[in-house]
Length: 353
Ligand SMILES: C[S@@+](CC[C@H](N)C(=O)[O-])C[C@H]1O[C@@H](n2cnc3c(N)ncnc32)[C@H](O)[C@@H]1O
Image (cartoon, protein in one colour):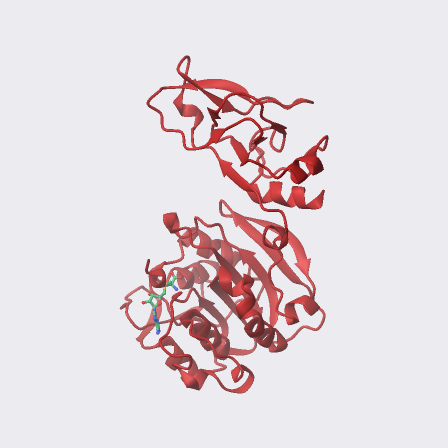
């Protein structure tokens, strides 16, 4: 798949721009501007801001954008320290050689080697920043999580303050399921200030634990217990929506009211429906939504499909079952009108037991 051309959806661009707590900038740039969605979101927030866009492959005639067709890395070297706000969703791609654009790898970046284009673009974007300037950049999850990029993260954290690390929904770029983060970075160290972390689910921000400046400087930028835990679970969400329910047919397990000893209810769907997730005896079933969100039980019935209001943990490790026994999900539920939990919420709860 070509990961180089996934444009930021306007709704996410707007949500991210709204996370920036800065005074109105005079000018803003995106050196891989493509659709210009990030720039346009900035214009929505700050009416008077001047927009500058660069792209090597796309021509842009978007209103209000001063456009230049150029390699973003070259533009950044020629315009270093010029911008107070820089926006970026660079192409996620490899470059042919480890030093394809050597002009970037000077000063604080001299010890960085990489064959990733998004990392070259990251450096280019940092170069554009004035002292005190802010970069909002979308990067693949590997940049934040992978051990192989720890050294690069640590080098960046030596000189820049990482204000926020925001995990984006895997559906942000449509069905392509690209895992990515948005980072908010200041070109000014702010000693001992924590880094905020958040997850975006259905375009809403959920703030999580902060990360200490020490850990950030050490290159540990990932705060998600899913990836650090030794628990591994095969947890799946059903695909049958309640719109498919009929009065008779093949049984399907569905959520039910909150109760002390929670059990799923049984509904029916046509034989032609196409369920993809089945619960079998010994699996754990979790209610995902509604007042009973987070309630769970060990299933002991026949192999039966589950509705999309349930998660099913397939063949759970007996040690985990032991840990969970007689415990109730006791974390806050998300949502206002309809309460729900995500797979990651359930994981975090298990990790806290
Ligand atoms: C992932 S898209 C993002 C576009 C836009 N920033 C957004 O968020 O919607 C990356 C863009 O970078 C452009 N691009 C790829 N290589 C480039 C380079 N070396 N210099 C400048 N732009 C480049 C592509 O043409 C594409 O439009």
